[in-house]
Length: 424
Length: 154
Image (tube, rainbow over all chains, first blue to last red):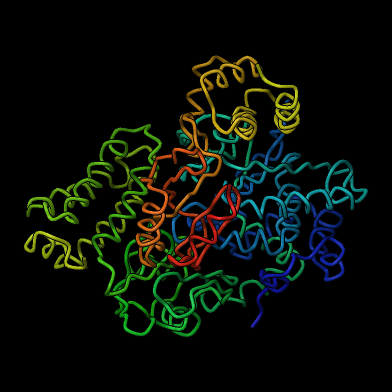
């Protein structure tokens, strides 16, 4: 089984330096792209590979790049931004790539920038990733020294600078338009779309924002082709995927597996199944903005289409397992508390609605909830549904709540009947 | 007044943006690095340097969780209360630290050695529970590891 993204990552060892990575052929896709291919060749190839955004939305990467106008250079630059903000609880996949092989990301960013005609690129990094920051800074310096960055890259006449911006916190900055505001030094509040970032993005210029895992694929796809990429997968969606599991399992961690590996295989074969004495009660499949899945859905293939068909979202593919000894209401409360805290405050339903829902969930835990409160919670899952809020933050928060109310209704009612949390 | 060192550090960051205001967050981080937190005077200093209004800078400073607009201790303990850490028992770690240092979330010890803050995720979910002190991550926490960790920070 091929593991292109993680093949050079050795946990607890330093990441490959530029010389080692070049020797391993790591920059050959980059050299081929900028020396032998036109930007439109690259976009066509990436589009035909079917690579889709690994940040969670699954938007086709090649299509995203094609939306950036070819001739819109005007007075300013075009920009590429690597979204390395990764702040959704339960998610730790990009960290592994950033710390383990920074040159793989840079190799992809150079190609992506060349494809959209960007002369400047930024890595927007999660504030907590201090080790990754040091590793990436060193890798960027090496890439400049080797002539892969800066002016006239490898004698091709193409110029590119890559900068790193380490964030100052706030989950909302992972939303691409909020990220752009933050990168401009402003409050991280989402922007109205349209205009989409491809037309008017960073500093008002055409911009593509791609997730780290997505960008890490690019040099491999250029080197080995679209067919190779598609065949790595078990389903129609190409490539491998970084899958993670946390919670009370024997071996929590992260694995690169063919796209479409079943949830059962990931949790039981790779994460070793549940710890002795614990039963699986539910799974949040891809970050806390995704609907619960339950035991009867364990054979779901973990790709975008299959998880959607099962009523949830693949999201980031990093799962949190809920066990029978953890209170499901406390579990949901912790997710909603996160979303309430992280609301940017721009639109009223999110700013006011999420803290209200959070307070009601707290009342279940302290034994003061009433029967009406279940209906109030259900009302809010509709009230903050997509279309009623400015961005996807509050609707994302409502996903685990609405499926949690469906699957764990009995447990909610027990809190009311027994006037305390039965798990405490 | 910004010190020369603070100014230098801010101007280095400015190189990566097309105009000075875009440096606002980096400037706040620079000043916080040197002073520990962002006082009203610090907001004004940054506003003057970047040719922004005080309100503009403060609107940014108060938005971001890792910018401190109140004094904090010499060492900041960020204890994750996210979902994976809840499942894996961060609450017992919180109780232990809270009792040992006589601190609740949001408080600073009298000797200014520690401030304890909650944080919603550190990306250590496969090794939870987790906390961060200053720039250092600690994970797979159990109550009996805490004393040794805290001793490193004076």
